[in-house]
Image (cartoon, rainbow, N blue to C red; front, side):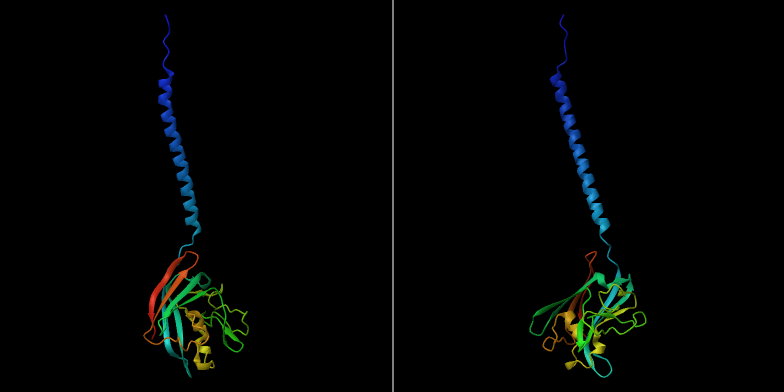
Length: 220
C-alpha cells in the first residue's frame, strides 16, 4: 500500500504570508526606533528659550541736563537672566516718506559717538557692576557692559540704554548708537522719528529661535 505524504505546497503557502508579515513588522519597528532616536537628539540639543518680561521705550527728546536727544531703553522687568550675546534685536520703522526701514542688532559692535570715542548701540546702565566708562577710545575696544559681550547679562532690574548721555557735543544732538540700531545712518535728520510714531521691535533668543518680545512701541 502506498504511503500518503502531505502536500508541502499547501504548507509552504501558509508559512510565506506569516514570514512576510513578521518581516514587515520588524522593519516598521526599526524605522520607528530610528525616527524616535533622531527626534530625541534634536529636542535634547535645542536650548529652551528663557522666560522674561521686557519693556521697550522710545523717546523723541529725552532730557540729559543741558540737552535733549532721541533715545531708547530696554528694561528687564522680571524673569530669567538674558545673555545679550544670545539675543537678536530687529526694528521696523516707517519714515515720513513711507519707506519701511529695518534695523538689526546681533552680537557686539562699536559706533563712533564723537572723535575718538566709541560705544555700543546698547549697553547695560549699571556702573556698580560694570566698572569704568562704556565709552572706549578705539573701535576695536570692548566693554563688559556692551550688548553682545559675554559679560553683559541682562537681569531683572537692569536697563539697556543707548549712548544718548554722551551725545551732548555731537552735532545736531544726533544719537549715533540709536541711528545704527535703527539703521537710520549717521545723520538721521530726514528719518528722525517723532512722538506718536510706531516702531515695531522683535527680540529673538538665537539658540532656541524663539521670539521673547514682539510689540509695536509708540514713541513718547
